[in-house]
Image 1 (tube, rainbow, N blue to C red):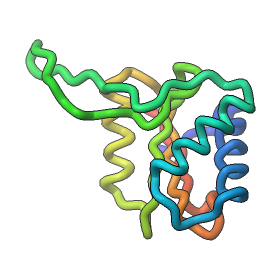
Image 2: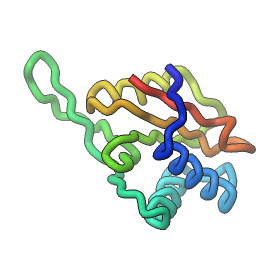
Image 3: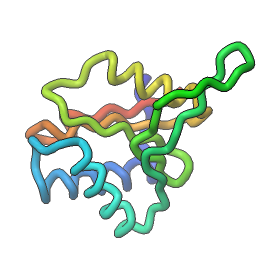
Image 4: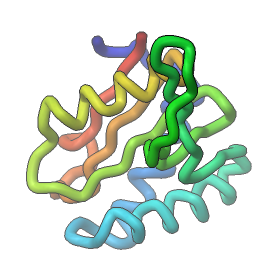
Length: 125
């Protein structure tokens, strides 16, 4: 489901566009994550990176390796990609993270595009 624009996601997208302009497409996801962290800090946005995602099944907390790339202002989950094309699987991953964490907003960003806006999806529960 598409999300309407809001000031926080607009600021995050602006930070991502700045990163994409500076380093371009074709790098590893981890590089974009490092750059995003620096840019978010410059924008004075609080964030957590590689945040574990809790997973409960039938009343039991399961050990898992699920991690959110970035959580900005404790409100918006950012899932970073550097792939040829975003797939439904990538969208499903972000939706699952939203459901598991109870967060409402998410951004899926594919930095491996000529224009970052071509690889951007806003999502809301």
